[in-house]
Amino acid sequence: MGKQSKTPLLQVEKLVKSFGGLMALFGVNFEIHPGEIFSVIGPNGSGKTTLFNIITGFLKANSGKVTFMGKDITGLPPHQICRQGIARIFQLVKPFHQLTTLQNVMVGRAYGKDPATNLRKSKEEVVEILNFVGLGNKIEVVASQLTMAERKRLELARALAAHPQLLLLDELMAGLNSAETEIAMELVKKIRGSGITVMMVEHIMKAVLGISDRIMALNIGEKIAEGLPKDVVKNQLVIEAYLGK
Amino acid sequence: MNLQVSAQSLIFGIFVGGLYGLAAVGLSLVFGVMKMLNVAHGELLMLGGYVTFWFFSLYHIDPFLSLLPSAFVLFLIGMGLYKGLFSPLAKLHEEVKIKNSLLIGFGLSLVFHNLAIRLWTADERSVSVFYSGWGFSLFGLRFPFIRLAGLVLATIVILALQQFLTKTYFGKAIRATTENWESAALMGINIEKTSMVSFALGAALAAMAGTIVSVGYAIHPAMGLEWTLKALIVVVLAGLGNIGGAFVAGVLLGGVESVSALFVGPYMEVVGLVIFLLVLELRPQGLFGKRSE
Image (cartoon, rainbow over all chains, first blue to last red; front, side):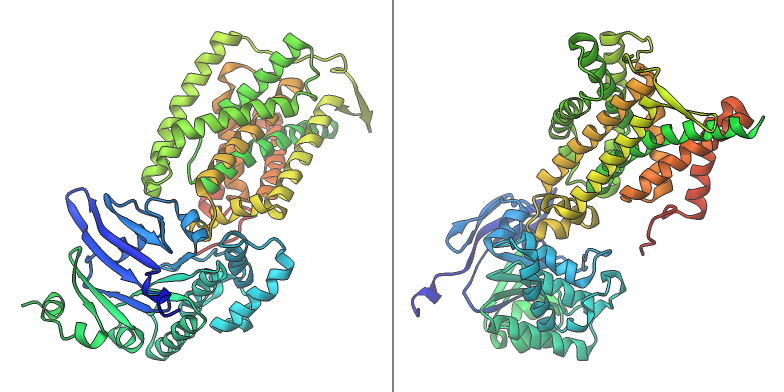
C-alpha cells in the first residue's frame, strides 16, 4: 500500500491553454496523490478555473497531458470524465432549479460513475449523502428555494452521488459567512476521510491553510510555488503575486 | 350569425389547434435542450407532409399508416441537420448561439421551400383517401372522421412524449440537459447525443404534424413560415418546455382563431399575434409556466 500511494491519482503535464493572444496556462505540471487535499491558489486571472475546466473536459488544452489513474484523459468530453471518477462543483452553483434536492442528487446517481440501475434502491444512498452534507431535512425542497450555503452543499451532494475518486471544488467557501465556512471545512475533511481525494481552488486563506496537505500557487498561467502550506505562504514570489513588489 | 355556426367553428378550431400543439412541442423540445430556435421547424413539418404524400401517391400507403415511417425519415434528416449544421454551435455563448441558429434556420427554410417547389411544384397537395368524406353529426354539428382522428393522434403522440420524458432514462437526461447543460454534462450525461436525439425527435414530431395536415387539410411549399409562427405563439403561450401545456395552448389558439374568424374574417391571423404580444407583456413565463428567478 505504501508503494501505491506514490503513484499519482492525477498527473498534469505541460498544460498550455491560450484564449486568442491571452495565455491562461503556460506549461503547468503537477501531481495529486490519493487521499490528499490539494489546493490551488493565485490571484484573479491566474488560470485556476481554466485548469479545472480542462481537467473536467469543458475546455480543450492547446497542448499537454492529463492522466487520471494511469489513463490518459486529455480531451475526453465532460460526461466521460465524470464516468472515469472525477466530479466537480462550480464556483457559481448550477443546480437543476426546478427539481427537489433529492431529484438533483438522483441525477448524479443515475448518470454518473457506476450509474444506478434501480432508482428506488439508490434513493436510500442519496438520502444518506444528503444527510452527510447536512441537507437531510430539505429533501423535498425545490432547489430554487435553497439559500446560497445550502445550494453549495447540494452541489457537493450531487457531485458525491456520481461516486468520484477525485473531487474538484471550485471556490466552495466563496459567499459563505465564517460560521458556514467552518462547517464547509469540516465537510471537506469528512469527504477526504471517506477516501475521496480533493482538489480545490480557494480564495479564503484560513480555509486553504486549515485543511490543505499541499498547495500550488499560480500566477498569470504559471506555477510559482508548490509545497506544504506553511512554506508556500512564506514564498517570496507568492507574496509578490498577491501584494505586488 | 347563430350559435350553431359559432360552435361548429370552435370545433374545427380545436381540431386544428391539436396540430398547433403538436407542431409546438417539437420546437419547444429543441429550444429547451439546445437553446437554439429552429425557424425551419415549419419546413420540417412541410417535408413530413410531402413524405407522406409520396408514400401515398407512389406506393398507395394509407397516410395514417405512414405516420411513423414519415416520422422516421424526418428523424434521420433531423440527425443529419444537427450533425452537419447545428452541432458546431453547441459550445458557443448562449446569445451568439441563438443568433447563429436563427441564421441557419432561415437559410434552411429557404432551401427547403425551393426544394419542395422543385420536387412537388407550388400547387397545393392533399392526400385524399376513400374515407375522406366520412364523419358523423351530433346536435347538428359536423365531426369529420379524419380531422377527429388527427386530433386523437396528436393527443396520443403528446402523451407518449410526456411519458418518454418523465419515465425513461434517456428522457430524464433530456430534461436535465434542458435545466442546465453544464451540470448535466458533469453528472455524466452525454450532451452531444442528447442534443442530437432531441433535434431529431423535434423533426419527427414535426413530420407527424405534417402527415396529419396532409390528410385533413392541404400542404404546399410555402406553408413552413406560417406553421413556425403558430408553433412559436403556442410555445410562448404555454411556457417553455411545458409539453402538456403546449397541447392545451395549441387547442386554445386554434379555438380562438377559428371563432374570431367569424368576426374579423381574414384578420384572424392577427388575433394569434396579438395574444402572443399580450402574453409576452403580461405573463412572460407563459400561461402554464412556472416562474423561475
